[in-house]
Length: 179
Image (cartoon, helix red, strand yellow):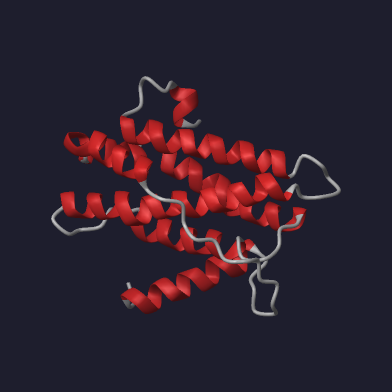
């Protein structure tokens, strides 16, 4: 169940803001794939740019604020979320197809549920950052669009959820060392 289904008034400001963005992105993706014969590039391109911005909000604003609030200790979910963010971003590189969208959803749907769960990222941050929640939401709302590169369909581009997750996990491991 999403935070929206639980009742938007029950959720804190961080949960409401980011869950609303999930809904907006979900709507764009649904419009992009409505025709089973083709991807509608207008909504897909808006989804792609919006999703990359959403990931940036979590990586550049939310997770660092949570880490700071915990005296420099990252949230237990942070590593997993970063691996999934990297995998999702890598699947946004090639030109979209229905098969590619299915691969994106393999990661994105459970990822969003994890973030929106009652004990997930957003609720945790609403509790941990309650005194700063309105300021953080304002920062996220003002965050600029991210620069989106042209699609790349080269031979090294990842096209499956499994390969993207594996590569992202390897990159995370290389950055942080063995755990």
